[in-house]
Amino acid sequence: MNPYILAILLFGLGLGTTITFASSHWLLAWMGLEMNTLAIIPLMAQHHHPRAVEATTKYFLTQAAAAATLLFASVTNAWLTGQWEIQQITHPLPSTMITLALALKIGLAPLHAWLPEVLQGLDLTTGLILSTWQKLAPFSLILQLQPSNSTLLIILGLTSTLIGGWGGLNQTQLRKILAYSSIAHLGWMILILQFSPSITLLTLLTYLIMTFSTFLVFKLNKSTNINTLATSWAKAPALTALTPLILLSLGGLPPLTGFMPKWLILQELTKQGFAPTATLAALSALLSLYFYLRLSYAMTLTISPNNLTGSTPWRLPSSQLTYPLATSTAMTICLLPLTPAISALLIS
Image 1 (tube, helix red, strand yellow):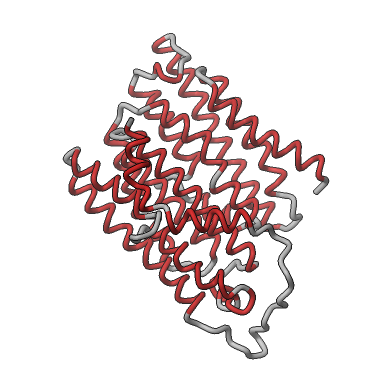
Image 2 (cartoon, rainbow, N blue to C red; image 1 turned 45 degrees about the vertical axis):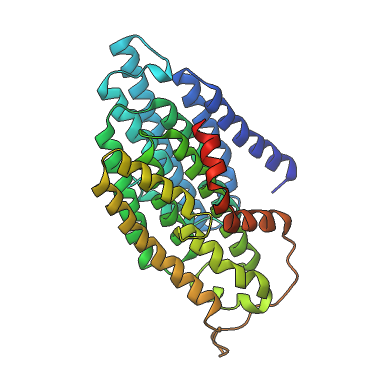
């Protein structure tokens, strides 16, 4: 892609998210979300491949449906209450509709079916943008909205953690596994949203760091399915040794960074009297942990078959920058001891 066009598209992505962040009016927020969608579509379709075009079409249709629902709900709210302010959603009907529209935008279960299919059709770089940056604008609206319907949020959160765990069990494609991982993590964030928005933000931040390093590892190894992970030991042995730690951090095992948000969420849910919900969420994390363990096993404890059908890829030096990967990997593995400091910072 022409670097000037790429720069304009990336600028559009940044501007769309910034407009949504800064807006207090529903029309401006909707405009920011639309800019975001339109800026990423050429990035998704840049590889002229039927699979990429199919993924782009699916993404465009779901995002257009979510944006139309959002616009309809905000107009309904203005009609019922005379308010266009984001924080003035008092009527339950537009509040529920907006929550569901934003859930469709970020891919919360049961409105998640588009996410694994779309991510599977993209290259790893665009997939990384879709899994991280594209979640920020809708999430900022959910945080501002603070939906009054707490039951809806808990249902969305629990369904997402369960489906995010179950859906990834039978997958062999890494991008689909990462999509289900994203659904499960978003479920955890939505569960705690109404009780502690600061913990939701912390969970979002740790999810972004962990997903960033996971995508960069797969990109460095040029891996798109589990079988190609087995050849990574020959290309980057040190990184192959560290990758299980990144994956287990995504799964939420102590003493890694990923344990921190899960620990704080379970603690807060129990304090609020939602012990059964916390138990179910913790059990669903075991499902996710299984497929992270499966990836770790494939990567470090198996050797790629050296037969005619499984040819070893060329060990060419990678042109990818290693500083971002090194930084994000260190943060993914080592941030748990900072939990008291981070908690104090967020709660104050």
